[in-house]
Amino acid sequence: MSKPQETAVYTHGHHESVLRSHTSRTAANSAAYLLGSLKPHMRILDIGCGPGTITADLAELVPDGHVTGVDHAPAILDQARATAAGRGLTNVDFAAADVHALDYPDDTFCVVHAHQVLQHVGDPVQALREMRRVTKPGGFIAVRDADYAAMTWYPAVPGMDDWLELYRRVARANGGEPDAGRRLRSWALTAGLTDITATSGTWTYSTAEERAWWGGLWADRTVASSYAERATEGGHATTGQLAAIAAAWREWAGQEDGWFAVLHGEILCRK
Image (cartoon, rainbow, N blue to C red):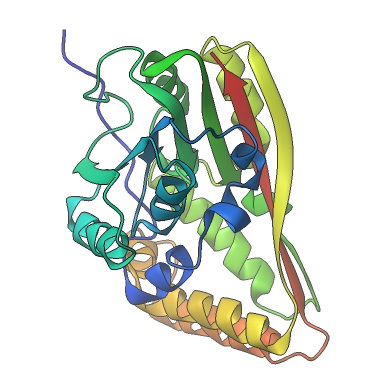
């Protein structure tokens, strides 16, 4: 019987505007709900590690343990290795992997962590089953995903609603679920997990610097990334419509009273 395989297409790709966001992620701002459960000796699997910033933080938090970062896109792993090497870490390694069929034995890791992953995969329930399989008895499965429909902002700049509607449509056409945050507990129950603590967390952008950074990366992503290509090639938007949405992002970023909140669902499951 063949192994399950990824069927979804990663919506964002790894354009500079995407990595601008990914490299800002830390264990503190993206995995705080997990940190109190970590012990120095733990062996951790970090799924969807991207450029490795969270992975490196986790490795520093388990100095007597080990962290393996995996990603479905092999090309990003060189950047992750450079991140770890630049911080002098020796208890971390990286490999390509498909979360639907992890190439590790049962009961291998103390913690299996995935940040902003399940919203992009073809079968999140199968992914959670695999995460559970490779977790040791008594270990933790930790998952955090944004929920796009729950994102909110002020002021109501024309074009921002168009961005949200378009993004959700493109993400679903690629086989993902952009409103994953609210579904994590349900998916975990379907996957057979029972000891589940469900929480939520936010990112908020309100200062001039934060607005310029968040609005700028989304403006650039809208016209220059893989997301832009998939939006146009899939017939979801024209280049002119994408340019208008990018302009809306920059207009929002320039508002002195601008505010944007990203809601995340979180689950911490004990095996």
